[in-house]
Image 1: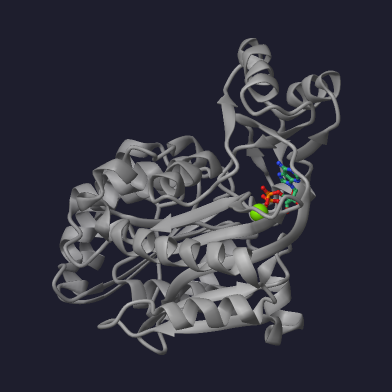
Image 2: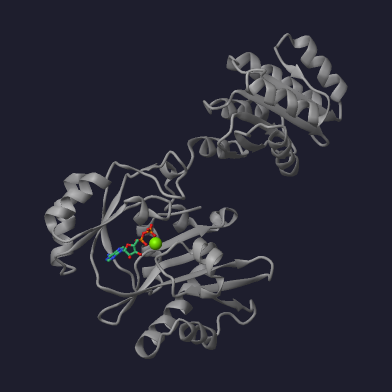
Length: 393
Ligand code: ADP
Ligand code: MG
């Protein structure tokens, strides 16, 4: 689960990490009070207006604006609040900006990158640090990987002081900044562990002209499976930032991920779902989604799955690919028939069922009177659904 920058900063603050604070507003009527706060409490005549969305790269997309005076801050706030911000992480449709943060502009001497995540290959958490802060770290990793310093944490020992110092030296820090940096890393590591984060990232961590080290931007991603014991983190959830069909699917325990293509897929088992997407692409089509209805699919699951797939206006044909192991094909067939009758279906549906009670399932489908295109085998099914999605050409 992702959260906003201002929420990430609240968490950092709780762990004693110095942050650049600001005021978050959702309506322009709150703007004057926010600007007053920055002027009076933070003692700054210059502002930065920052869009709050769950995506990085806001600066490059025009969602972070330096404002040298109050009038300019007002203008930027009016433009950013309510805009549809596109960054390399929002997808082509962009994301509506519902909240903005007003902060003081600070004099930055240097920007650094710091993040903690799990290195699955090594089975250890890794701290990454780089002098190339503020930039897209993916680009740094691709073009100059040597500029990303790493330290792996032994689970039984935790982060050691020498590791933090080594990273700090590697970044060229010394004296007071090195001390501050080491303290920040230790706190960030505790925070990462205690919040069940998958990633905790500060980009940039800045050294100011006055010599202070603080977090100017922060991002977290939390382990969804741990949220049951992270009540405070769960409070930060903002479903406006999530795909509405994914939110709906989660209510029914369906593993659904929306994609950009036009072939809707309903499959049982994540592996088969991945394989189905592969073969659709192999046959020249583009999957509209990943959907794993799970091992115990019943009539209700199939119906809900269908509803969610069809709520995507891009879907031009649907492929149902079920391997009956624990789930029996006849149950799935009944689910399909009920769903099709109920849902006023207007796109072709190709069905491939194999495994337990597949023959019975085919009979149910054939005698149901609903318009379904039966397929034998995965290749046949993929060809048929791709042809159906492109209007049979
Ligand atoms: P994003 O990573 O989404 O682009 P950031 O919060 O990291 O957003 O801001 C992008 C860049 O804007 C920073 O790397 C920094 O150079 C500059 N910036 C952001 N906030 C301030 C500020 N308060 N004062 C000065 N510069 C800032
Ligand atoms: Mg950033």
